[in-house]
Length: 317
Ligand code: A3P
Image 1 (cartoon, helix red, strand yellow):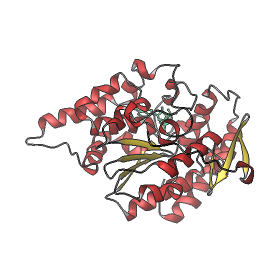
Image 2 (cartoon, protein in one colour):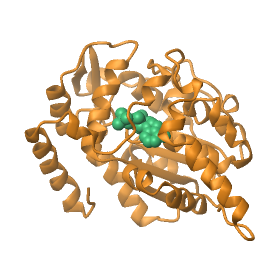
Image 3 (spheres, helix red, strand yellow):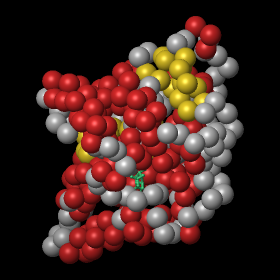
Image 4 (cartoon, rainbow, N blue to C red):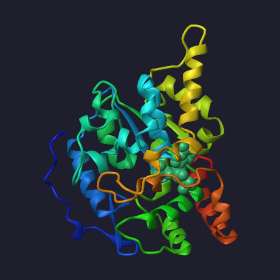
């Protein structure tokens, strides 16, 4: 592993807001972060030097990161794609701030997705606005996934109380209010999405932007596009054999299969310093689940913000 920073951030100078229970968020460079995340992020920003051959999977939490980790690993490491049948996607593709930098971290060599220095895959939840200097310092590729804001919010509301550390219940009203104000882990969600979206328009050959909904609706088409973007397309010769591999990857990474592998059903283990059961990254894996939880008023409230934030920029959801 590259050397870890001893630099610390002066938290007393940062705006602080309650997230949930006794969990707090600190605002830094316009975004809200949990303390250990922000400390590890300093290490990432100080020490992670992307290689031109790196693929960086960026996302706001709860938008499909785990699924895309499995897909990217399988696309890039095609001959060892069966590793996803027995390894949690987070144990194949590490997240910079949780697993490679910060407290009790692993090394690049300890994850199959980063062990091969000529084709490393890493993930991050850092916003583009914070991370741009690092990722633009080389020619690495970035893949960004986003998701319908209401489904992202509902997924987050289910996820955070599964923490092994902060078990407090979380009212949906509070979750909606915080999300709307941008006071959420790595939030504001809207700024996070727009940062990478704008960069994908500027540099489409280096930043691949996809929505959870596109990937869910036409998985095979988009996995094929992803492979082309990553420089490892599927077609060769008559294409038949490669097409079978593509089908295999799509099927093995489907929610139904991925969520049922033993390694992914475990309540033990955790992702670096993030103390959540490994099973917490799989819930219902569908589209539109927010309709089962949010009231009409909540939906209207979020839709209005989405319109203001996204539609004004030309991004539609
Ligand atoms: P839900 O809570 O709506 O089910 P992340 O990986 O960024 O934390 O996102 C987690 C969300 O992605 C959860 O959404 C989870 O169920 C869903 N997910 C995990 N694996 C998936 C897969 N193979 N296909 C579709 N969705 C998946």
